[in-house]
Image 1 (cartoon, each protein chain N blue to C red):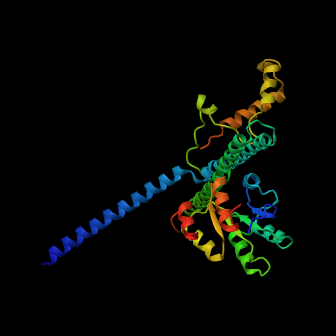
Image 2 (image 1 turned 90 degrees about the horizontal axis):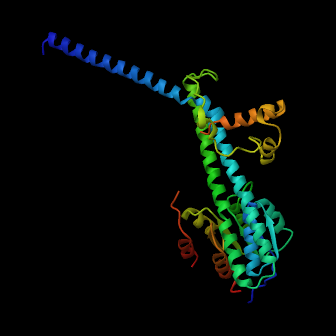
Image 3 (image 1 turned 180 degrees about the vertical axis):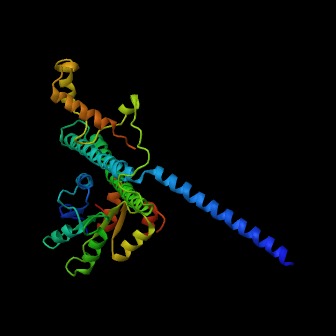
Length: 128
Length: 212
């Protein structure tokens, strides 16, 4: 099935610079419908008011981390099917394994480039 | 063994023990002296907080610079150009490179946490050795000559800005400067004299292997 290029995407990072970078990279990849949040709890609140086609989240945020957000999403019947990609500087094996066990669809290590983002999105959503 | 021999042996042991105790006392005296040279109060009150502020300032400065770069890049992307693909690719590379700000910010935050840890433990060490707040050893000598002028960039609220420097050149000669100007100069001089003193990481390919 073709990827809906107008689907809403939620990006979450406590660094505004990073939100801006991801938003621009997504725009370059053809995705313009992007919402932002600066931590897991704000993201969760947004997810309960709007259905997103993809969530791209940082890990290390306060008060709710990206990992906690992922657990909340996967435990919520209405949200559990949402594709979830983690983009983080946490690059230890234990982190990746924990995220995978919690149900993350893919994992990108910072710093990353547009090609990596596109490849991982295609792996999760299908080619676009 | 005769009793005389036993007594001599015992005396030798006591003498050795006595020497060990004196050495231990001397060691403690030396250690205490060395610890007092660390000047924990000086580090805790001045140098470590200053180092933390410098690191915070680095994060803010890189964030400002990164945002300026990105704003300019966004304007370029919106502009009409003859080779849009070339421009877009170059702009993408600029955005990718700008993610350094996030990474450096996180690394610096870890260093700030380490400084706070050292500060906390110096405080405990200071208390354990009975140091009082103002009972420092010899005061740190004030830097002199050019050394006193070499302190790197000032933090926000310190030093003077370019407008003020310009005004110093536009207005009357230094010796005729107003008392308000002199106060500002002293503030600038004061600020200029403050001394500054589980698991393995894996790469993207390894992570990809976990998802394939």
